[in-house]
Image 1 (cartoon, rainbow, N blue to C red):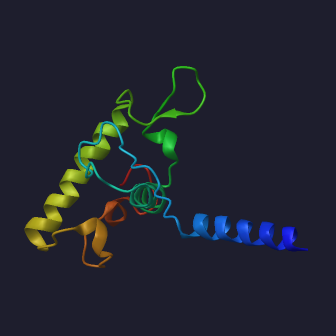
Image 2: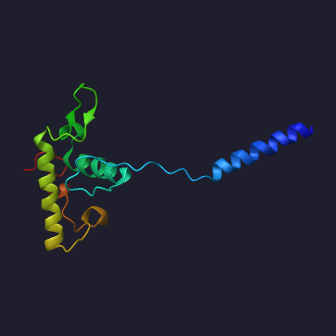
Length: 129
């Protein structure tokens, strides 16, 4: 009985110690960011790509991102597709409009209805009319 109690106590101390440890996810550094902040979190980047770009343009990732050389998956750092540079130009344009005319400092973070965004012109279409 004493041996079982010792094992249970030892396991509970070990498990409690592990639970108390702070596990920090490794910092992700994205390659080839030219408009977005270099220290953008994966949560912010995924939200911007999925919630903003994909919804506003009605496209998927492969619209701007080229295939990997092996044909499996996407090479997010590649500039092989011209759509990626066009997107950067459009991002600079909307950032500039928001800053100059609407005095918005961080338009991607405000969620304000008064912010010019991709959806302002695209309205779910890859090529606005």
